[in-house]
Length: 168
Image (cartoon, rainbow, N blue to C red; front, side, top):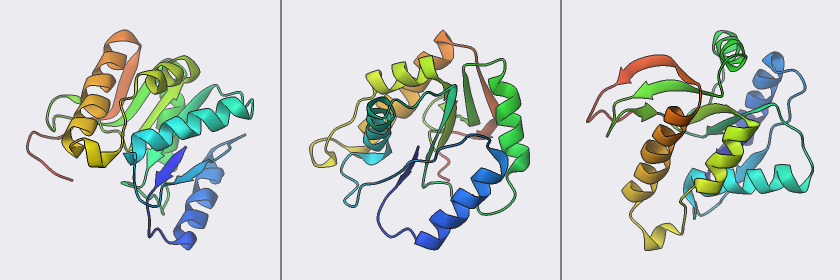
């Protein structure tokens, strides 16, 4: 599931699909566009979940990615590391961050079916005109991620890359 907002170049989406397909066997990429960014990436992830359930798509694990990262070069080493780690973990984050508090950055998470279903059921999303963006991010990226990290076998690929008060 790849969440994008307005203005993303269609050539970048095509390049992303081609790049990801190089490393992923039996992969289905779902691009979700929310032109007004009404629900942030978290609401779009919920829409992706609905799509998967409604279309009876069976998954072993899922990559949840948003447009904070647009890989356009060789990502084989990252994808292979995720794949290796998903053999023994339920949740893999690309980067462990200390921004706000310790958690995995939400722009690329990989999780098995059980974790993904819990993740989506507990997402806290709503129209941004009714809630500060910080609250949405804190509840979904920091609190929920830590709940999953503490409950399941979880591992980041890169630790302590982002410190408090760092904005990437």
